[in-house]
Image (spheres, rainbow over the protein chains, first blue to last red):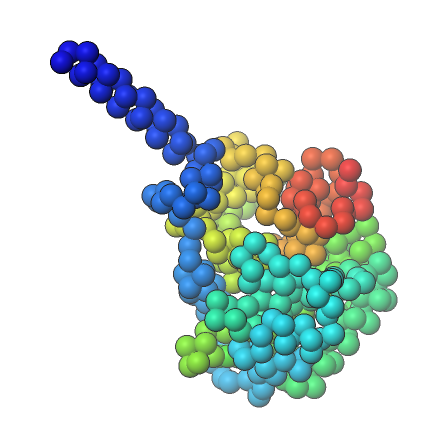
Amino acid sequence: VKRAVLRLAGALAVTTAVVGVAHAPPFRAALRRASCPVGGDASATATQREATRLTNLAPRAGTSHSPTRVVWGLSLGAVTDEGARAALGLDEARCTKDRSGLVSECRVGPTTTFLRSNDFGQVVAVATVTRSQTLAGALAASHERLDALEGVFGPAQQQRGRFDEAHLVQGTLAQARADWAYADLVLSVTATNLGDGVVVTTEAQVLSPERLTRR
Amino acid sequence: MMYAKYGAAAFTAVNNSIIQKAVAAPTASVGTSFQGLSQQQAATLTTNLGAFLVLAYGGPNTYQGRSMAASHMGLNITEAQYDYFVTNVIVPALSDNGVPTADIMNCFAPPVTEKKAGSVKCDTVQSGPRPSGCP
């Protein structure tokens, strides 16, 4: 009996040690891959992620409704990732998906386009990042986008800095930014001096919470 | 030093603003990677990022996280994602919290835009073409 008790105690000690080590931070990822629940730090579900995103986007949203939710010919909140890529002429071979499968990143020349879907398969945000090696090129790109958005949404509701050479050459991270904020759509255009002669133009159009809660 | 000039409260405000903007942003790295975090992981990230910012800008060293390269390993962050993060998260977070443009350009810019061995950008961008200037 004494020997059996000792064996049992030994087995318990070894098991406890193995389980303890397996739950140490370096090995938790392996446990998750094996579908083992790891208390306290399990990844959020897609629905939780979307809820978190919308909560953090809410302060940027405005109060009036946008004149249209169709941007770049895409109906945000309705179009699928595949449909958006087809509409924008983004060859699938130039696109990669992130680990979540929610974001497509498509690189064509100096421009990278991000298509962000929610877990219902709807594209809810599009963004572009364009790297220009010349200030003139960056200003041309940003004015093209500004003109396009102003044609639809009117003058920017908020602007910081100026989209001109004198402002952007001030130094690294000198930035011009234009924002439109509606209850259902948030838009922005930026031009930023990143140093070494590189100026990056970004445009982002994001469906905001009200649109989704009405869905 | 920026930490001495602005103080702990300002750094906390900028740090919180960065986290909030990052979670709302539409790109892969600053969107889903941040959103995939549990509350515990998000709290750890907030603590580590705050401590890193304080350290990078001349404050006391309380950073206990991993190196930049190790902490971004496996996130497949591209240069476009990084540039979007800097231009749509970092710069607005500083501006929104009242940091003057001159300080953003002269003091806050170098740590996030430098491209050399061991710099934040070179260690963070680990997918796609290497940024020019990074080894």
